Length: 391
Image 1 (spheres, rainbow, N blue to C red):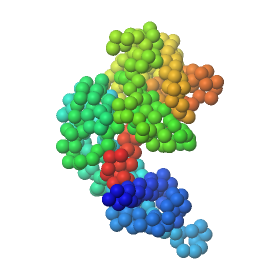
Image 2 (cartoon, rainbow, N blue to C red):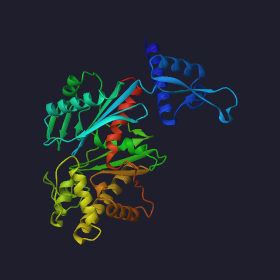
Image 3 (cartoon, rainbow, N blue to C red):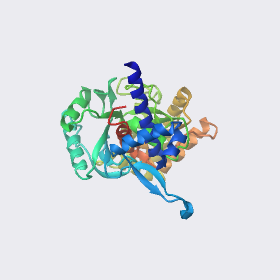
Image 4 (spheres, one colour):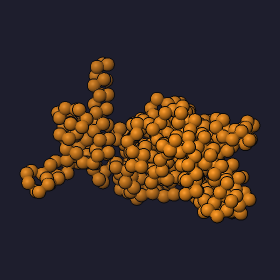
């Protein structure tokens, strides 16, 4: 019995490995897959036959260079059969996007919650948006993932706490799946999704470990290994808001001084720039619009520039400690600081350059603050590639 189970697990592992290889490298022949993955050609052939029967893969023909010889038979994802849906709940907007198995967007919509929703209201709104998006694509959804700004229980079924949402011990997975009609959905924290997407961005390069710091109403971190999330970390890991990495002159809402959230969170940044005369609006991009306005003002206004430089100093000090503790080869930042733009980039690069003697590990990706949305899609695609099982 155990031998049979082991063989089944091995087949599932090899199947997922084949699919991820095609995802990362494009259409490949059976021989190329065998060489890249060290799986026998017979084994690749069996996997390919099964996935073609399921309509996950299809055969495409490629003419050799110079049009000499027989066309190559390559394996690629079926273009019109399967889809994955990523749902990204953020402080200032929620995005629901359907993508094919390469992560290419098929349909999407973005909206915001006027007030922080209850778990029931959030589950209802997300499931309705999901249905609207899926109705536009004509594909069968094979994987779903939700990025949530909060801390999970060990099984990721319960949101233990979320400052933005105001939730405590909310059974969100049960509420959402009851409306969605699906038994398996992957749930990740916003920093996890952002880290995953950034780890696969060309600007990061080939690094084994990436650390991502997400900054908004609170702060959180995540780690990747080999372009995937670090699998050995518990679900509740990564909450850095009340670690004493901030400025000891800043009083936190928790009563202590020096919490990172009290110095670098968006509420702290607004207090520091309150006398700059920039109005704070509403709508799905309010934080980003405010931060961008401060960034533009910092070019000529001393008060705005000092606030940006102080934020950069706090972030640089926090990142330096985290880098020394965890040893990543690269780090990325997400959240409202990215909208500040060039003034923050210059100040943060300069501050980290001093700590690391000019060899700053900070990377600025093309994804910007949309990294968590892209990451939710990637988690959903990975789930789809694993046959709809939550990894």
